[in-house]
Image (cartoon, rainbow, N blue to C red; front, top):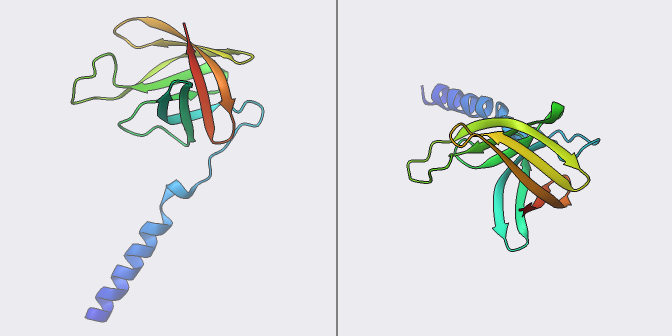
Length: 132
């Protein structure tokens, strides 16, 4: 009986490891490296640096630049009082050289335009500086 249990446990572990989707590689659009999901913002005096991801984290800020100039922002909204509830807000984006204009309708404050200047953009990182 112990041998049967061990065999079942081994099989269960192998199936679960084989079903892990986080091992998939991130698809990068070579024609526009900005397109994709950007998470884990790190703020500094020189700007904000994001990491490229396959998707948003459930309970964390992120921004996505999708094809057809659609943008998504995963945010907890304007109120930062716990418990934070994250939601996706859809908008549009356009790029003029190194300047990105993002228009998001976050529901409460209406449409907001954000202007970012791209400082660094590669396969893994996006660094932007917020413009007034």
